[in-house]
Image (cartoon, rainbow, N blue to C red; front, top):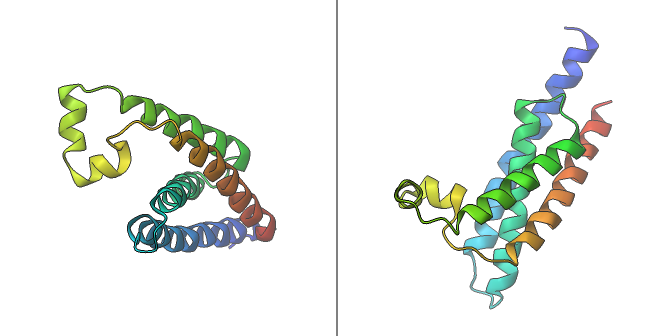
Amino acid sequence: MAKLERNFFRYRVALLISIIFIVPLGYFVRFAQGFGYPELYDFLGSVAYEIFWILLVGFVYPKASPLWTAVGVCVATCGIEFLQLVKSPFLEAARATLLGRLVLGNTFVWSDFISYFFGSFAGWFWMRWLVKIRK
């Protein structure tokens, strides 16, 4: 196996391990609200959601720029947030499923944009760090 191929393989493994780490952490933070700070847990859960999507895009497209991946995911999640204002029968049917609720959400909240921006920055930094250690 050529050195470049080994580097991409290691990078993808690092991304996969990161995804395996961030998913349960995000769910734990979002749903373990027994400590009295539901807004903080919602914020941190949204940050983890954003990081997850950035890492997933990086895993699927390992040659993608960390910056443009983070920007693209941020634009997409902001667009999905605005879609929560749309109450079409198709979207409502999708939101009635667990996967639909997890991906599309169901309530538009302006403050979610802050967590998306913060999560995009954190995801960009994380992905960039993985790119640097790959080399």
